[in-house]
Every structure is written in structure tokens, then in C-alpha cells.
Amino acid sequence: MKSVCLRLWWTLSWCLVWVVVAVATPANATGVDWKQALGERMQQGSEVALFGISGSNTLGARLAPALVQAFFTAEGLQDVRIAVPRENEQRIEAVWMGGERPIRVVVAVKAHGTRTGFEALQRGEADLAAASRPLTETEALGMADLGNLRSPGQEHVVAIDGLAIIVHPDNPLRQLDIAQITALFAGSVNNWRALGGPDRQVRIYARDDKSGTYDTFERLVLRGASLDKRALRFESNALLAQSVMADPGGIGFVPLANVAQAHALAVADSQVAALPPTVLTVASEDYLLSRRLYLYSLPEQQRSAAVSAFLDFARSDAGQHIVEDSGFVAQALHPVSVTPSDARLLGWQRLNLNLRFADGASDLDTKALVDVERLAAYIGRQGADAGQLTLVGFSKPLSGTGQSALSRLRAQNVRWALRQQGVRSPIETLAGDAVLVADPRSPQADRNRRVEVWIRQ
Image 1 (cartoon, rainbow, N blue to C red):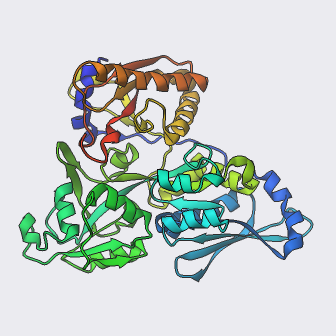
Image 2 (image 1 turned 90 degrees about the horizontal axis):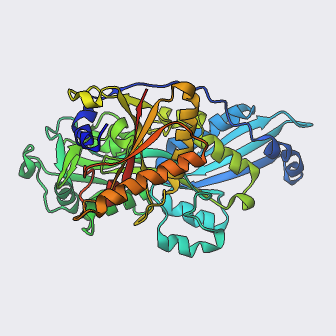
Image 3 (image 1 turned 90 degrees about the vertical axis):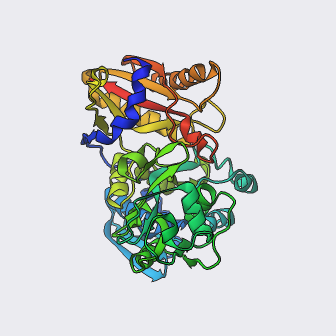
């Protein structure tokens, strides 16, 4: 296969057919130490607060409690239940029967916005900060006494999400570009007729200022513009979506899991074709408003064994199954079948991930480092049927010949990382043509720096 054939993948990828590979991965079994320590902690009371999660409503409303429930069940705890002491807060309770007497353990999940999670982690009031955006450099510096929170050992990607721009189902518009969306939310366009829609006033629904979802929207869509002061603000994604559903003139933004019966628009950006938020476009992070969902922790040597066991579970195949069930996009690997008219691609499949890199570097970012482990495990499960692996690197469009060299270097770095994981299957590295997934002048330009994974069996 020659690199020129990769020009076709963009057009063809929407004809891809999912081929789901069922992988039976046992639940994480690293919880023995944390359960044995429960008896010692019982001297402090009749109930053990195992750990706490604070922050993002996107994670805290549904996903984090579901992961804790499944973790408790996988670890053999009984009588697992959820209590709701107050709005946007949940207590997941369970009983461990393995000691001299039953021990009730509790995990508290408080979902009041990403910033509140970082604040709680810094004050020692939470063990995990749930975030729907990455920690900023300024925040990391301000929390340096907690370690390097942007390192692979403390920044944990648990799911992928797409920030969906939603309208009422009766709105005939099916796609908008970023500039149009910005104009709508900034209030400079206040009637849908200006964009080819009905003669109806635009009403804006947005998350509150503490929300990581709003921070993501502000960075990727508003891009320096101010949100219209008339916008109605919400702490809850679900309530925001319900409000748009009840308003034919409404527009809002919610995580993919909260779209419900609203209509999610396809989003375009300058030179880039409009893409809707789907499982495929979000999993590969090609959809312009896709994002990662994080849990931030203390360094491994400073956090409890229970927290480490939970993080292992959340990133395992069993945990990622809960991610999928909760309406988000899981990181478990699946191949997609290619059926192009161009025979040069027949027999090849593309995996549902792009490996990406640290800003301005050829080093794999924190998610890609874990993805390499997932990819090595996937290849290992295929055994003798693993076939040939082709890694195709991409860079920002550049003049001259540097682009091809940098693209291939990124692919070679992934190959080296796979070799370090013990992969011995044939691996070819290619420099892909400049297929844009984001405007190179936009805040999402780093999406163009990627490595795609293709398999021929």
C-alpha cells in the first residue's frame, strides 16, 4: 500500500462498517491490598469513606457513579447501591464481607464542575478530580505540590466525548460552521432566518462558568468572543438538553451522552468538511468538538491502593464497557472494514483510534501512551493472525519537504513504542498526505498531528 492511497480514506471512511471484536477481559483483580486494609480503618467508625471524586458534571452525573458501582461488583462487594444526598451529588455504597465483620464502604461523587474538582483535589477534599477538559499549564503550576498532574501517572483519560451542538428536532438546519455557531452564541445572529432557517428568534442555552464543558466550548467555539448575556445557564447537562428540546428556537451544547431526542448538528471549520458527532468521528477525535474526559490523581506512591485499583478498572475493557453503556465513546479497540472502489485498499482495515502527540513534539501524549499498550494487547490477542500493521503519520500542512519527514518520524515513534511492548509483528511506517481534520489556523490544529493504524490480515 502506498501513502498516496491514504488520500481516499477521508471520503471512504463514512462507508466503513463496524466490525466489533468481542474481547473477554477479566475484571481487575488488584484490589486485595485495599480490601485487607479496611479492617484497620474500622477503628475510625462503622463506615469507611474509600475515596472521593469531585468535579465535572459530565463525568459525575452518570459515568463516575456507574464506574464505581461496577468496580465494587467486580471486586466482590455486595449490596451495592446509590444514594442522592443533594442535587448533583451521589454516594455509592457497598458492603465487604471478607473480614471479621461486614464493612460498609462509601465513595462520594460531587459533580459541580471541573474547576471545583481541581480545587477539591488541591484542598485534600477529594482523591480524584473529574475533568471534561485537560488541566491548563497555569493550573498545573499552581498545584505543583501535588506532583506533575500532566504526567501519565496522574492524568488518566477514561473516555472520549463529543461536544454536540444541539437544536430542536423541528429546526431544518443540519450543519453549521464554527463561525456561524460563534455568531449564534455571541448574539450577533439572533434569528434563524439569517442562516437559512425559519423566521424564529434564537434562544441560547449554555453551561455555567464552573463547567469544563463550558471551558471547552469557550476555547473551541467562542475563540475570544463573549457569550450572549441573555443565555440561560445550567449546572446540569440533562436539564440543558431538555430545555432545548422544549424550545423550537433553542440552541445549546451538551456531551454526546446527553443529546437524547435533540438534533446534533454536523460541524465544519473553514477548509474541513462538516462532520457529525458519531462514535467513529469521536473515537478517532476527528470530529472538531471531540474531547477527552479525565480523572486526575496524586502520584501512585501517594494515593491509596483503592484509588489505584479503581483507575486500573476504569481503563480496563470491563471499565470501558461501562463507558460505552453510559453513552460515551469507549477506548477499547475495534477494526473497521474498508470497502472502497479503489482496489489498492481492499483487504485493509483501520482501527478506531488516532495516536496523537504532545504539543509541538514527536513524543506521544498521555492518552497515546496508554493506547500503545491497548494496541499491543490487541495484536497479542490476534496471535498468528495479527497480520501486517501499517502506521501512517500526519503533520500540519507545511511548505517544503519537512512535513513528510516529520510525519514518518511520528509513525516510527509509535513503532518503537510497540516494539518496547513486545510486538514483533511486521510494522510498516508511512508518511500520509496532508489530509486535514482541522483548520491549521484554528485552536484544533493539533488534531492534524496524528498516526493512523491500519491492519491487513
